[in-house]
Length: 196
Figure 1 (cartoon, rainbow, N blue to C red):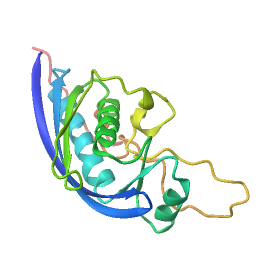
Figure 2: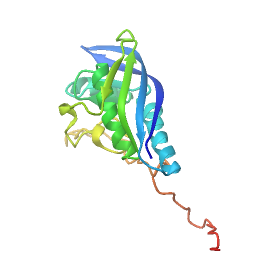
Figure 3: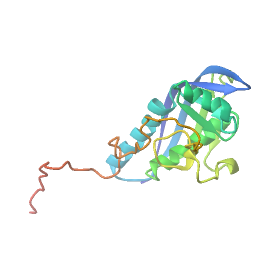
């Protein structure tokens, strides 16, 4: 199968740059190659992408990974923080999302190109391609390389801190009903058609 598809997404997020917080609107178009004949897997891959945009990225704050103080302040204020390897420019956000989306679709869909624009950048459109070399994204221990529904890498807490964290960090795709295998519930009757 050699099907190419595209899908547009819109979301609003905060941007922390040079000590200033700004709200930004993003328009993104993904260009994808379908890499599976299984319609269920195709739908789950799209649902995973939708989940990342609507429940993880919408209303988050993009902050450079090295700005630890800002990340801590936003997290303390109860805001969802998306850490980036560099300052939150559209090109960096596009490159990180291209990498993350390919990780979460696990080769069922291959995101080949990302087209991103935002209000802060005066609607200038940036094109990011899968073929580009993103040396800064190579570190395997970062959230953008993980296939889980997360937008930040967990910080190691100091043993001196006495903070009780009530957030559930163990959300995965199966918990969200977006695993690749269809699970049958205990006690559920499954009918298997008789062979002819």
